[in-house]
Image 1 (tube, one colour):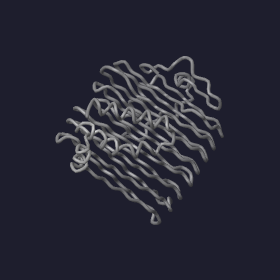
Image 2: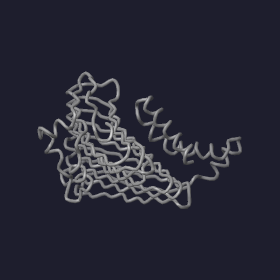
Image 3: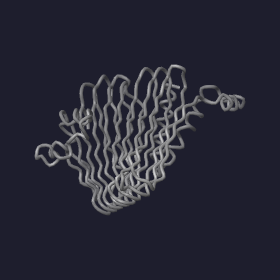
Length: 331
């Protein structure tokens, strides 16, 4: 997509149906999915008011995609409002890459919606690298069916003002949600990642790990809330947020929350904030590594653990390359 307008010719992939959202807006079939998440859903309401295009991706039952599906949302300044919706059928497996990028001063809103059928397995990657003149408002919403697994990877590496909301709900027993996030913050920017996870049925699991690197005068926020509903017994949920500060002027605020109404669960959360260990830095420099390269190695080690959990080696290498590029510019 370029400036909120989808390509007229969608790619042909076996087992995958791709439809322009503008067509579903015209015939009204997408209307029920446009409702905001709640009364305080400002991003959803803004996107619903202005969205004119996007994509609807339907992956057939049992389909196993050999290559990732990439959804690009590129902007060249001004306002852009898009919506990306996907349905993954029972037993299907797919990797979907959502890329948010552009140039120039801009206001963008993007809402992604995903429904996983029984036994489906999806890895969804969001790579946000807007310029430092852009305001980026994004939302990801997902329902995870019985015995389905969703791995969501989010990398924020740009934007002047960024808000990324994540709303996930387990709707079937055996559902599993994995969140891995990396926030690379530099300059005079602000990034806010807010997550609400609803464990609504019994026997579901989740793990959320977020790593943040802050330099310059950047500010960051992670708000994560796990809701365990009354009947969601045997829930196993864990959440951790770890931050590395590279400057005295940078800040990062963390607010992990657990709201539990069941009595037979295993849940926990934690948060840490630290600086580069000078002993580690000295160790590398004593072996001939210059200071900037040594700092880069330590930063990469801090976040690489999260990236390397992904199974696709090509995607891992691409993400590590973006990490290297960010550190060359901001390290």
